[in-house]
Length: 153
Image 1 (tube, rainbow, N blue to C red):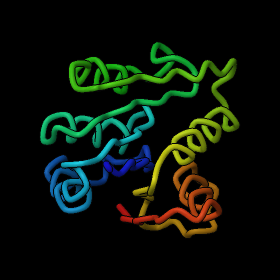
Image 2 (tube, rainbow, N blue to C red):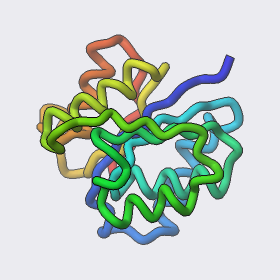
Image 3 (tube, rainbow, N blue to C red):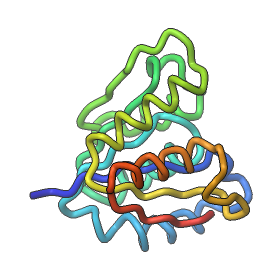
């Protein structure tokens, strides 16, 4: 049975180049890719970078999850989704009325609730007690007893 993996990570990715992220994804996503369904938030940063990498380098099933609609996502994220449209199996628009912290937390919980495990890419200089969405998602997965692979960026 395929494993389902929720990906969570920082939106702040400009401190590394694209080759660095490609190498990171080869190491930590590729081993799961042959039999995996990936749940990815439709935001910028790790979400868009992992989507582009998975779509271009694997045959994995990909589900994009957004708190509101795809049209409400930043331009860079919409472009990544459009570029990978033929590789995305499903786009889930949760329809939040306001794109505020509670909507993003609801999206993250939705992904974790459907995943067998979580791969998190937090900023390297944040601690596990942090309040970022990445740590909120990782900690929610822990509260659900789900395995977590934490890869600081």
